[in-house]
Image (cartoon, rainbow, N blue to C red; front, side, top):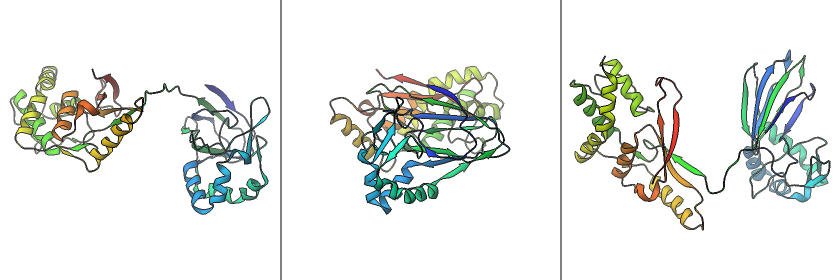
Length: 334
């Protein structure tokens, strides 16, 4: 990690990659404005992938120069210039700058005006106030800064995250991503709550938003609306009984239907793992459902969870369950 104050003068900074001369530049760039200038100083950003797509579409020859290390050399920390392609096809790293930290071939210099135009065509600016900032992928996004007057101070953090090989996890939501089970979920949820509290609680008499909620957070809101006392006892009973009600609703014929394309996607991912000596990734869930209910919905939709799901991640409400944030924990399935 590299933490520095950026004090590079008030002139305009053209779009660039931080630490572009390193073998592998830091992946994450975080910037926060500490003090604002009198005028100017806007942050300039551009998605490098959009630039590359446009370049490949409009000038394939210039794109080929970008991907060839014969045409660009970047200055390393020891002052030497090392041949590096602006776009590394193997790693996907897009490195760029236009100052004394790069040497370009004559062909690249000739094409630079066109490249500059494409960059500005896809760029945008962000006007930060003190305390505001941004986080970006330094392997993909280019950043710069407009000129300014007065004093301005920006704090910067560069991070090289550690990613152990073979530990990549792809997480899926359930409802609306892998399957659809609205009628099933509503029937099981309200039937269970009604039986526990001994009161008719249903979708029609409970104006509570069901979408994007955790099971537990939703339950608290329903109990609050109907002024149910002894919520702790109700919650304990609900977590114990809810899966049984979900199975009962499934047996009544209320469906859990796999989403279009979900089975094909999962089959392809499994095939990618099976074709490799070592699995490329783990497949898992990140959902507001409890673990038993999540698996019931998937099985009801015909998804074989024993061969697909290796990790389960469930959003758990914090003590202040009304918070927009949720704690997430991951649990290895044995």
